[in-house]
Length: 83
Image (tube, helix red, strand yellow):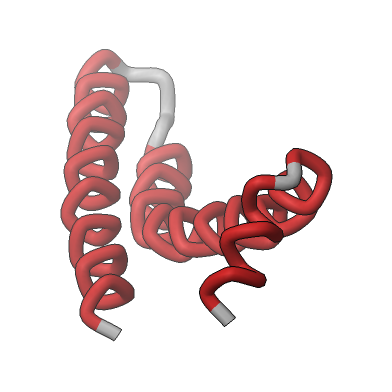
């Protein structure tokens, strides 16, 4: 079985075909990790009414959303690596 997998991955065409589902899987993983951040930014955009403090709050929420994305993606990828 190892010889078959080794030959399969050495072939450039089959390597590209097998790598596409892997890339799609990781896109899905990072999309799941970005979902809480998207909700934070969406909530912040709903708070905008044109004042400077609201833009400052939106900026803070965007950076907070980025850090939430980093933390959640580290947890999700860590959980997937343990499986």
